[in-house]
Image 1 (cartoon, rainbow, N blue to C red):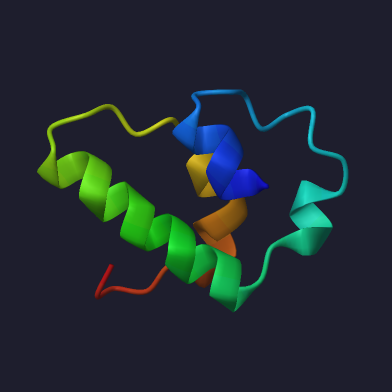
Image 2: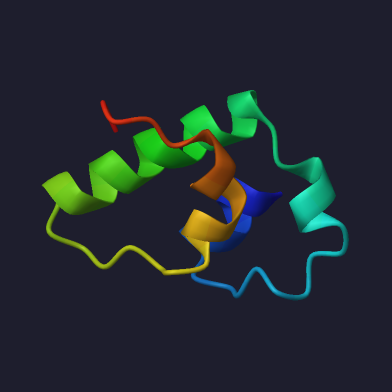
Length: 60
């Protein structure tokens, strides 16, 4: 649901429990999505970092 919301450029703030749902698997999917957006020179919505903040590593 989080990835779909970002894909259709909807805000993430209405998603209830997003902070509790964040996990390494979701974070990796969002990091991959972010890399695709950057490679295509598209904007990365700042709310994406809400779900991956606790899982970022130096390699990202």
